[in-house]
Amino acid sequence: MSKKKKVVKKRAVSGAKSKARSGSRSKPKAKGKLKPKAASRSKAKKTVPIMGYKAPSIVKAPKGPKLTKSPYSKSEQELFRKLLTDLKKKIVGNLQSIEGEHLNTSQKDSSGDLSGYGLHMADAATDSFDRELNIGLVSNKQRFLNDVQNALKKIEDGTYGICEKYGVAIPKKRLLAAPYVRFCLQAQEEFEKEPRRA
Image 1 (cartoon, rainbow, N blue to C red):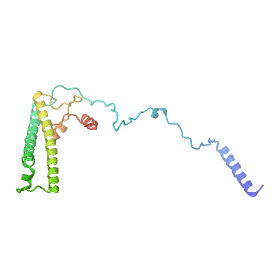
Image 2 (cartoon, rainbow, N blue to C red):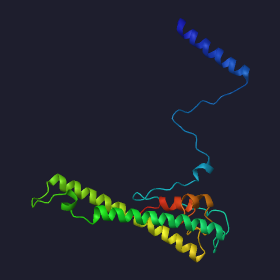
Image 3 (cartoon, rainbow, N blue to C red):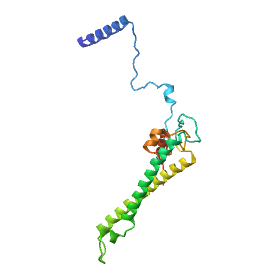
Image 4 (tube, rainbow, N blue to C red):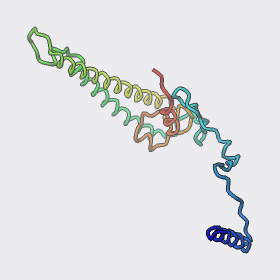
């Protein structure tokens, strides 16, 4: 035998002896095969989006008793009423100023042009953009005003501070930050995640 083959045999024999001495036998690893995952992990199902919308997941309702009357005292409700009426006055003032300055004037009046000549195309586009922007602002303010008026109505009805979805009390800190809210925090998050179709 050649010298190289003898060296290889000696190494193989010495490797087998050292494994036998240690008493550990290792199984040869199969290349390319993966171990199967535990059955408990594979049972968990994932939600698959269908046409861009995720299937609704099962959500537990927040803890707390279902309420029919406001959980807040008369003095607390008066504080919220004051906050809401101040907000209402501010919103109405903003709406009136936007409508008076921007929406009730024509393009000629707003540009100050008294001549009979038409506006330049760029000026007309800018005026059109400003008008659409102001209409969007008025629309948002009107929605906000509706929420404030609904909250004031709930104070009158005695149902202020109750989540519309789950019927639990809305925390006082949340109402002090935004006294016009309709939902508790969990319900608000779910409402914002829901897909809206136009």
